[in-house]
Image (cartoon, rainbow, N blue to C red; front, top):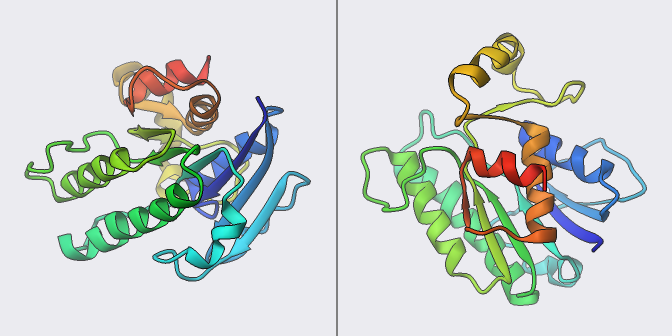
Length: 220
């Protein structure tokens, strides 16, 4: 099966890493990235749309309907944000984007980057975990062919890419230690990208994927 995938967040560390795996993978024949600003990446498989308002992509309906999967890697940190503000840029933005895709192509697989510790009950003490849990639950109710919620912990960046966050440049050398001490919390950006591709190709036995699931699916 050859995949045609939509990807968001290509100008961030995680999204750039997933895009890198898509461009390398022979089973991915086309990638459409939707960004607010140019990615600077060129490749024969790659198409790019610059779109300012991610809360409303209805004007792109005709351009997004013929794809097999969406790898939604767009996200922001909750640090310094109040719940209403964080909910708007996490829940509202993601659901608005996903609802349009589900309307134009319910046979699509939707993959969402969430995070380790996400609260599916939506009632816990952690604000970001409640909002992420509410977002996951809403996505799983949409009429996609399949939807998968990816919950990585520490993501080790792919060497040589340009959008690696500064703290990772300081602490990435500790990855072997963290992998040894916290094996259920640590994966690589490559493993995450491969797992997302494989989820669209092969499916998976459950919709919420913790780090051990991500690592397992990356090798299938």
